[in-house]
Length: 104
Image (cartoon, rainbow, N blue to C red; front, top):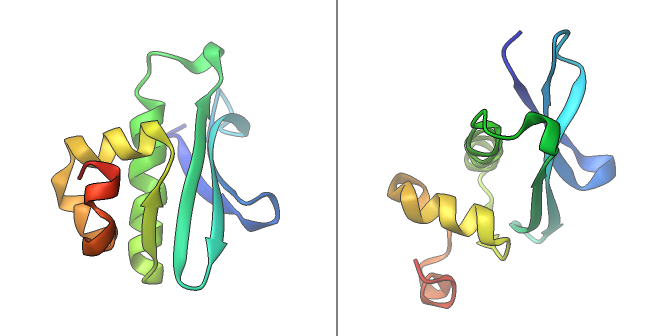
């Protein structure tokens, strides 16, 4: 099964599900949602799933959902911030006045 990214608002995080049956939580990106902004604070991939590109899939899936919801992104998490830096087509999600603070 293809890995799936899903929002778990009750846990304030996006999760990526993988494994043989596609039901194991392979990783997550924690966030804080407030007034039209989503602050990503921590991203983690279970070591058992490392080296498969799941972190990038998680970042892309979460940010695509955020874009569809019309939210602004505050990438406090170093992984999400670095991923946006490598994929400039997502920089517009970060408010222009705050990009320098995140090195974007």
